[in-house]
Length: 173
Image 1 (cartoon, rainbow, N blue to C red):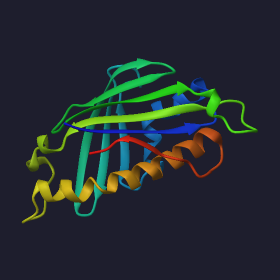
Image 2 (image 1 turned 120 degrees about the horizontal axis):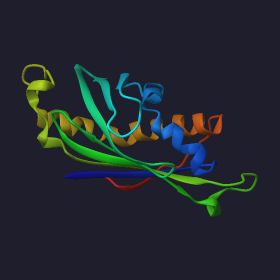
Image 3 (image 1 turned 120 degrees about the vertical axis):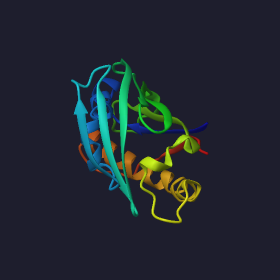
Image 4 (image 1 turned 135 degrees about the vertical axis):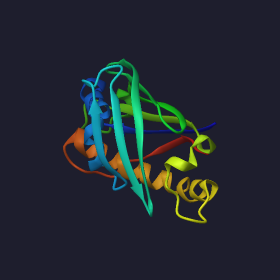
């Protein structure tokens, strides 16, 4: 199993941050590779999100289920199709990290635990002569750059204006 654990700061309290990390339907605004999100449910535990992803010549719809919510601090999810993956969005108060001029701050964590080799190659519609191993080797290095873009756009939504954000990489494959 591989693990990604990233974090950044938003200059708002957890109660103001959490609705943004919980709003999966807004995520296509944060990344060019997530094309569409469809929700089955009300957004609470048990809700299913179909996440339509596209990159290069590949397209795939991941199905994510919300398995636990402890607002305003945690939302746990897991994929229910084709690949063994689970993770969590976590929001923790960190007022001591607020810069001068800001009242408070919260640390936003994103964690994903996954087995890249558990993917079913038949569901990915890989081009001829392209292996799953090749795709994994190409995608994994791009994850950090993609995460930076997502975090910057997420924080801009939370705070109401864009700024440079620092992405802390705690663990990466």
